[in-house]
Image (cartoon, rainbow, N blue to C red; front, side):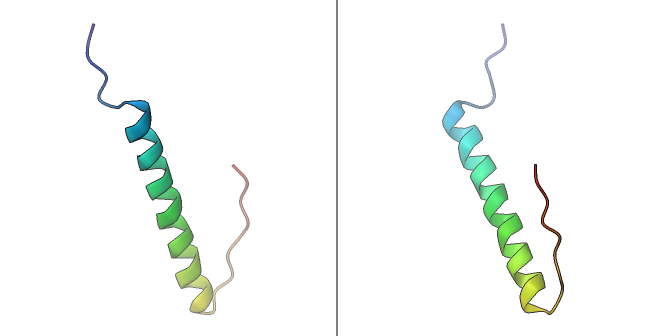
Length: 41
């Protein structure tokens, strides 16, 4: 059996980092005068 590349801690850290990245992108767009759509996952 292969060893997993990720453990739970690594997976959560990656997911949180991506959420923060998307949030910062949205802030940048709003500050530039653009509207963003509210999207539910």
